[in-house]
Length: 440
Ligand code: S3P
Image 1 (cartoon, rainbow, N blue to C red):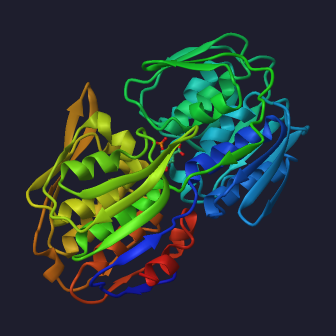
Image 2: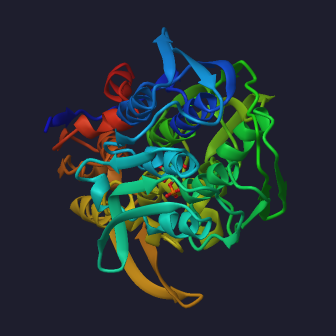
């Protein structure tokens, strides 16, 4: 536990580089490892989570080197060169265990896939159920009606194609099915009622996989060979940029220019939401690669409340904590529908956000409602325009990187010093965050 004193900031005028996209880095490493030929991925983010993915690849006998931000992976085809039972550990990385499991179901060896204490509490039935429908032999530790890590995966003769409607809008679940579908004989159809981030689809197209999208349906067919594009550039992570975007909006007389940020619309939904709130945000130098990216110029703005609907949530799922900070400074009542998934992230983010915001007197309500026969959560935040007059407080990270960074952003806009209990968790996605904040 490493606590941290947060000093208020009065004005920011700065160009900021945030790290490469974590979601794309995981996927690029995993897909390159089952492709033919060598792939240079640059820049590749080395954080605790991507380290977990690389560690798994190392145990799967994948050869790679990492030097000066470049990860070079030697792909040797769809099947890892292992026999017997392989022990893997995803530590705290949900993306590692959920996505890599899709590939492991198609392999010729068994895997015992473990995780650290926090990830051992996160639900896995969302992947084991569809993967079992595909004929995979995968099982988690059962408790009540849910499955949790460790997962045990045994080889099967063949995986079957399925037609599957995603019950939760989750890119990790979708990706696990897509990657398993590469090994199945016929074409798998995945119906996504609400779109989630599509990095796996975009990367697989870059590797010439047989994957097409028709509106809300993804069709993936058996792929004998993934052909490496040899080089993959990874734009900077929108989720990391989001903390600086909101910080410059709520700090008077400020601007921040963020360079080369991924602005994939299935991922950067916060941009649309903040613009609706009156944020002064400009997208500059837009480039179209397999992912679109651009520079983002943000200036201090007076924000007004907004409503986020259920189908918008996946496009900013990881940015809800920082959105709540923006909403706390905005004029009026903001509402987020369909926020239930926040309860099963690195922490129960609903509880974490509520207890921290209440410390500074923000009125936040959590309501349970039923949407299409399913229980869900609605979050209501009443903005407090004079919040910046509030004195600093003792905030809690709940050992969750995005809660820690969101509370640091809030604390920077308060009237006096605050304290946060644990910043070690930030290494999960953004090891340079504290250093960057201190240069502002
Ligand atoms: C991720 C998808 C999201 C997100 C997570 C990363 C990914 O999770 O919250 O931080 O890389 O696919 P879900 O798929 O569970 O929504």
